[in-house]
Image (cartoon, rainbow over all chains, first blue to last red; front, side, top):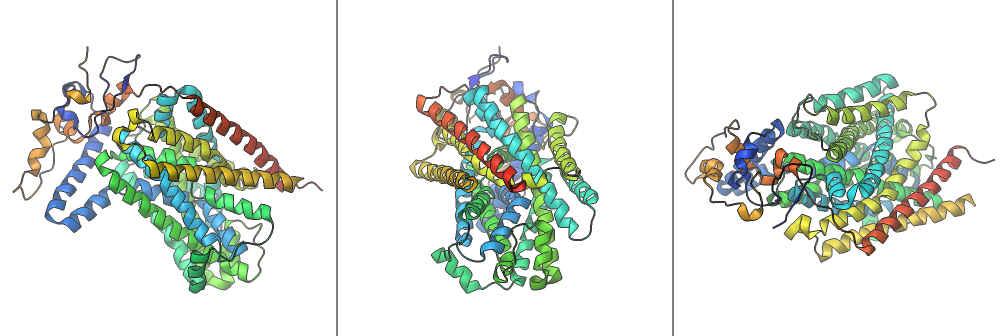
Length: 474
Length: 99
């Protein structure tokens, strides 16, 4: 049984980490009863629904199982569809426009496998410890390393948030909507999602929005891709990309950064905790994460296929922004296809803005030990919600400032995500192999092998890019 | 002095655990909604360290990092800083090309 260390600054209140027993059976139940919060009650309500679904599973296996999965999916789907954000979809679009169907189709699938390896560990960490990632890093490694991890996260999150609002502005710009209106609409959606004061409702609203990432699928179908070539590329990883090595490496890095980023680790673990998942839910959490990865991979590949006509017709898309892709595609996929593409970019920005702002707020709340749950009302957890809304508002405002260095931010955001990932993975690996924290749920041999392989790939990709950059500059 | 909470003290046979379990007895066709105003019901549905008050009072202790782990973390930190400098220079030159 795992043990928690007592915090010397708080009353003597036992160390414990029972992973399978319920709180009512403990001797401190009466002490805690007077301290229950709104958050506890909402979480208990969610747990009750899961218990009821599990009970139903005994009577009707299929329906009951579906019901359990329906209740427990969320963090995994949201994190992957959230990461199919505006700069990511722009990376996929640039990939399709510059290299067509070939190497990058299976490569994108590989990046999602890498993402799946990483995110599965966050599900276990969250379900077993009931702690967010930032909190665990501070507790186990101290403030020095904690602030480094937080610095990477906060800087990366803010820059990414800016690019989400660039996507929102560009997506609606296709329909002639003014930037200030588009950005304002984005902020209203972020605000509306959190006013419910309930994690469950927030999760379902955001998932409802996230499913519109599928808009890239009809856009891809309208591009009439050569499905045989798609199948061949998946098997043979060819044709290989030709051209400037620096450009190819930049796209490789951008596509990795479109799938594996630090905010995903922090967000999913915190969401698993906020959802109230327990060790017995880990298999459902794995299903949720796999489902999210599959959907996001399919939609990412759809973006590549939708823009492949630009490659086949020799259109130079090297300087394209989101709306320009939609406009350039209009002759080949029609106005409806182009409109779907632009709406997809808008949706990608909205969902990611919600998820990334929430990720920053969770991390902040965990570090300063203030309320950090979407189950808390606004008045009870105002610092948490202030960070959430404040970071979104600041990013939105930056997008509206004339001559702000937006091009610069778009250029570096995915690259920074890839570079910041190895340290984040190192913390994750140390935590998930920590028997005091994880007990029987520590990583096994194959899980460690896969995670170390992902880390090595990321470091090699970063170093390769660095070397190519130095040569390119020389 | 509050009583200690640890795994050894958690007894599933405690009467309070029955609060939610009763609803799932065989033969019960319709599961009644729980009364979440009753703290015992709330506590019966959550794990001990899922309760906010318990989480606020207990923390995982600091872990002593091995030399290897410290070298790894410092190495990765240096890697990130060095790479960021390269990326920033590269991005600035991409936006303002040197004639």
